[in-house]
Length: 167
Image (cartoon, rainbow, N blue to C red; front, side, top):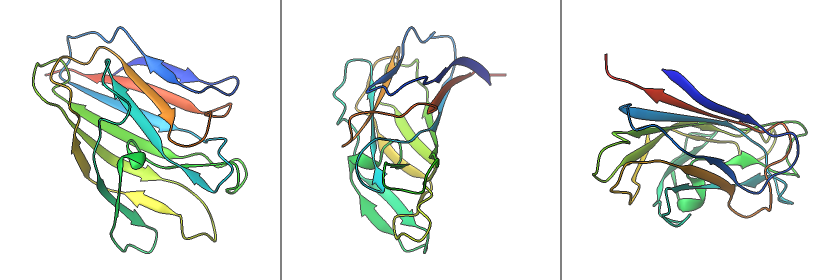
């Protein structure tokens, strides 16, 4: 696994973009440690592949800390993150896997892990094996991320893009 780019925010930012993604790998992994500025305990995130709309992802399962299954919409892809009213200085832990990213076929994005820490709140959530079709049938050359409801990611949020190659 090769690190293509790591972005650590020095100030609040509304959209984070990885561009110029080389087409010589097999899979991509996006790691996100983020917090939003929405006045709430939690915010969702949306992800845009190439020029597709931010809302090109569909529902998948989100499990609260209690373990009970719930169904959530596209605001959970690529995972929830703490917001302004959650426990101070907490950041999400999200991992998204994009298989066959350079091929000209529909992609499958899988959230392998998504955790927010809102101690004492019912909004502690863990998403496991949440798979959706991306609606992208060309090679992925750019990935953009943005908060779903709030305006910005806060400073010190970190975004890393890794490429996996065969062999």
